Amino acid sequence: GSFSLSLRIGLFLILMSVWLLHFFKSKNKADFFKFQWNKTIFIFFIVLIWAFVWAIIRGNSFGDLFFDFNNWLFFLYIFPFFTVQDSEKFYQNILSILSSAAIIIFIKSIALLYIFSHGFEAITPTLYKWVRDTRVGEITPTGNGFYRIFIQSQIYSLFLFFILLFKKDRGRFIFLILSLTTVILSFSRSFWVGLGAGLFVWLIILILQKTKFTIIFKQIGQIILVNVVSVGLIFLVLNLPPKTEQKDFLSLIGDRASQTEAASTSRITQLKPLFLKIVNHPIIGSGFGTQVTYFSSDPRITDVTAGGTGEYTTYAFEWGYLDMWLKFGLFGVLIYLLFLGKIARRLYYTEYFGLLAALAALVAVSFFSPYLNHPLGIGFVLLIYLLSTHNVRTE
Image (cartoon, rainbow, N blue to C red; front, side, top):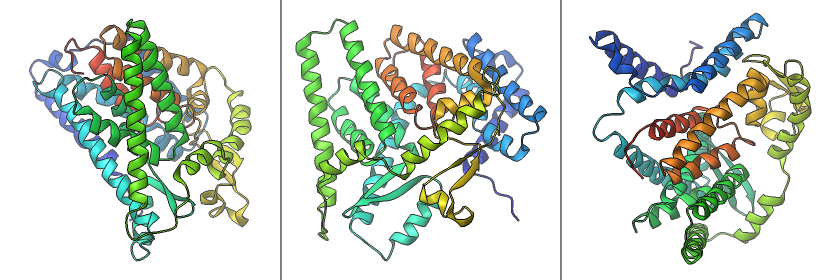
């Protein structure tokens, strides 16, 4: 009928059901909770429950409330994660999965770039519909035959870049190129801000670790080389046959960094209505599913609004921290940040420097894109929390 269930929610229900089945069948249930419970995350769980109950009390639409809240249910994966953390290959598998994912995302991104930038009109309409209908990303023309290929999960390429940046084996160079190439061709300014934030933390860590300046300059040179090769790889794809007219790619990057287009304008127009709604309940929040109306010039919105006015009412917003502030208040945001801060502290003292730089990138990206309140970001937070509480080095 009209009922639909996403693959992500379906997998969540299956995995949690299997975990509960094992839990109820086990004679020693304490084994399922052998982890370092953090008081901050416990308080944050209470904040999330409060935002759910408060939304019901305030009469927020239950449909909006549920679909807004279901992202946060991803935190429940903390239980099966900690249950299997002692398995022999668990930690090795995490890095293997991240590396495999980076390869797949790279191949998918570069293939889409090639197909759309070379005008294969026989398949591009169907391919575009597939990308949009599966909700995995966006494909947008930027001018002169170049297309922006943005896939939400490309943020894991950004994470992997920093994880590998602190590894010393030679094989990492290829994965650094694949990861950075994916981040560049995403044309996501949020990712680029995250890249800058992560590199800043990377440099601070090297200084705090009293790394010799000759080594620092050598590593900076390696990063520059990876960047040059990554840009060159994109140039190569753009100039593969059949030959098409291409604008200078470096100019496109400069234009992207400085231009103001529909999507960014839409973000800006959200600010005033969001703040006006936030001040109603600045400390305790207004609950999940709280709606805000604003005017957008984004074609994806103007095309579906009456008369093309762009007047749009929604409960989901690009400004990650403002979205959270609206839903569960300033107190909830501070508790979440305190939890992330404690993870960062543990990562530093356990010398998981790559994960720490990746966390800094995630925190920066979330200013402009909602990742800390999305399963992609929450999943990474849970993984690094898991690693930060474990005494086995895996980087």
